[in-house]
Image (cartoon, rainbow over all chains, first blue to last red; front, side, top):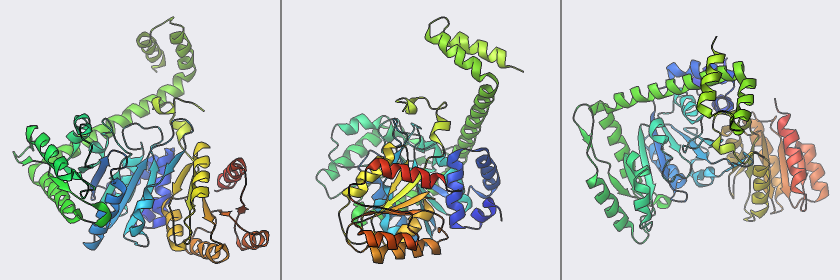
Length: 315
Length: 148
């Protein structure tokens, strides 16, 4: 049987090999995605993001347990950063996910960001496609510890939960321009610590100032702010409930369809950009290297050099 | 290596693909994970992706993680003296999961006779205290690189 068929049949070894293949970005990876693509698109994809140390992995662990109690199969992709120097990575998210061991309804995969800066790896979306095609109904995507600009998850997931902790004080102000804007659900984790209620109040106040998010049907979505203690499983059922409500809202309001359209456009545009770049490199790689030298020596500016290279590379 | 890997998004993709993936696990009950962390860090600095599972892993958990993570090599750190019990069970679980071809290495306090016995059982290499990390890195690169 081919790899794609084995994945669709739910073979766990094949799923693991398939994810490695899409990570390698080899030509065969595209064939695999092509074979799986028609079988994917059924899963609800939930992004979990937030600063390092807020408890994302622990929350994913608790959330996955909750989904398992309801019978849904859960795929998990957890992204950690690659070293910008060696390219290596320590992937430690499994440490907090030990409760999920031994459950055939769960598949956990760690991924290194491999130089991508948006909070995910370049192949994360394709890894999600592999899990989706394999029949996992809910897929949890944990981003690298995110600051302000790691908002790629908003494009990759249907529902994004942004995790915060009490005591970030004025830091909350700093974060709110980037991450909080993409939140469909907000979670104040470590809710037993001092200042948890205050953190909830600050977030709610911030949300009350934001313009309402209205879907095509006129339905509005206001991100709920939930308190949780992930290590104890407290507040997890309401979080799962809020995620389900957001999924229902996407369906009801037409917002989901609109998001899917935008996502499809972005994925296609990116694929076109990459294909063009590869073709250009194959055609004009040596001219490119020479042009880099000329730009470095200020014999030419980058814009003019680019125009020249593209003109020469045209068939 | 290049200090600019992360800022050259498109150009570095070839360099960032096909990384060696190593699973580092501590089976059994001892809580001494400094050695495991030192090795994990050294392999990371050698450009590998190291999946670190943490303490008190059962043989079943280790084999399952190796499968899901599609590890190229599995490293166990054992300082409890229980290696002759734990390692054969990890090997057995890995065979059950169809991972017999993935090299398993063991680090920790392993008497020489036991090291010979473990290798006879199918362990690829045993590293004792004081092994230079460069030696471990070279072995892992060779063993993981040989995988089909």
